[in-house]
Length: 150
Image (tube, rainbow, N blue to C red; front, side, top):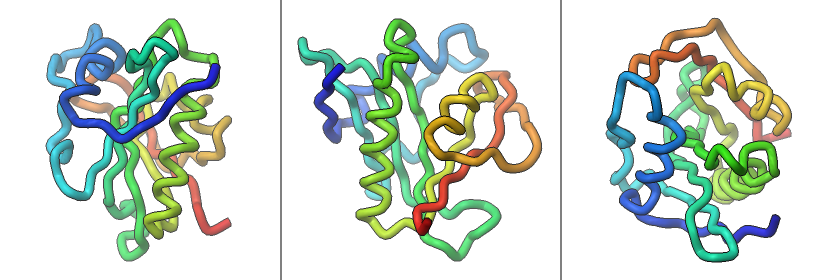
């Protein structure tokens, strides 16, 4: 599946975030505090009929165990359920990683749901640290990280 990927507004990605990331969770708010900051960019993957089918948010934020290195945090990675496992997420992820490299980041990291760890590992991320509970979702998460200097 060939997708068009573009930077978009916060408002345009909220429906996909809500549908994928907040369905059945304690929080019904799909926003993140950093969504509208200058250090944040949102990417959307568009289908052939110009519908947003996946989103990701990328912001300048140091990785907790390497606070002095330039890093980008990935947040709000969401692919419509019916397209998960089709490569859409991997395409969107590669686009964001290219953005991080262009911006001079030495690593990309995320707080990943345990249910998504195989996706991240399959796309070059390493799982680090112990599991933790995310309050908004009530789900177990791990930190995942990818070095961009290798």
